[in-house]
Amino acid sequence: TTIRKRGRQVNLIEVELSQRGWVAVTCSVALGPLDAKPPRHQVPLDVCSMAVEPPADAVPVTPDHPLGQVVHVAQGCDMRLDAATPFLVGAEGDPVTRIWLRPFASDEADPDAALLFALMAGDITPPVTMNRGHFGWTPTVQLTTYLRRRPAPGWLRVMASSTVIGDTWFEEDHLIVDANGQVVVQSRQMAMLPLGS
Image (cartoon, rainbow, N blue to C red; front, side, top):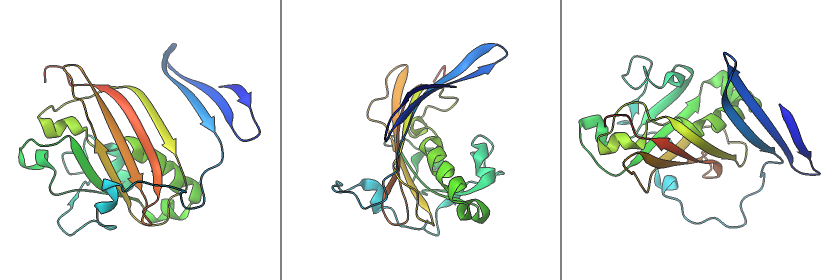
């Protein structure tokens, strides 16, 4: 870990994660104050059209669910997938995934755990490429995540989408709002399609 800059409001830090002597991940982290007041401006967001709480037909992603065996964090939270997700019924559709997330009560009661859970939500959905018939590991090559504010207690609404799915690459954007409709996390990643898909 290297501190690159200490500022009055923002600090810049670089972190390397090594495994067996090789650098596996490098991170550039900008740390500063979170928003606490309502935004000065916000365009209407599609994710806010989702119900604040998951509807009765939302699909629980438990450790026993096929997705729960891939998305292991489902063991540590309550995750519900929109029942209208095309890949759930073997169909194809828009590269958009909608889920509801909530940490378990003990984590939600801990402000720091709730904050880190919201940050993790920026990369928790099944790949949107599954809605286009591309199944398998989609390795993330670059990920940028913005933690905007502390989440209000309750369900997080998550919408992941992609605008371009190429032969090799696709981008995936996550937008996460809390129970009050405030943007908590935004993320964008560049990832690769599964081999042979």
